[in-house]
Length: 171
Image 1 (cartoon, rainbow, N blue to C red):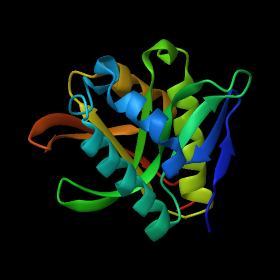
Image 2: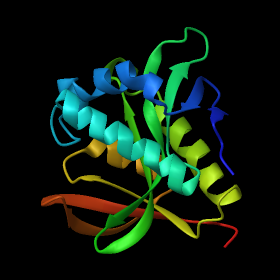
Image 3: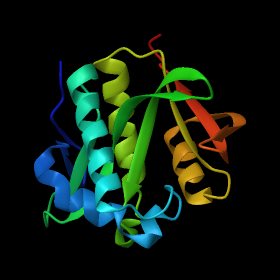
């Protein structure tokens, strides 16, 4: 079961495909966006990340979507759910990243809410996690607005992160 297209009140999401390469690399080469996501990507690193996201869809039937504004068709960002190992455990992670001109408009919250709906209603996951660098207060605030609850501070990719969880209300 795959959910290839989704909509939020202001956005249209499309399952990430190889044809989205230009959007993926545009985001990965943006210094503002990548300041909290491990630094600017080379073309090789961007391609590796894109392939990893494509494999999520192949293996699990879900992954990230590329989001475009409904009204203008302008690239806004990416987000969705993926399976990861974090803090030594297999988890389902909610991820989101927006281009800087779309920060502060509530769009990451829209993406997160829709992604959680799919994680719980279509895939029946018991919980979804979300984490960010301890100094990325904007992203942490998005988690809180969506309803994630703080669980712990962790070290992830050798850096300090805050770790949040959202329990499936139907579980």
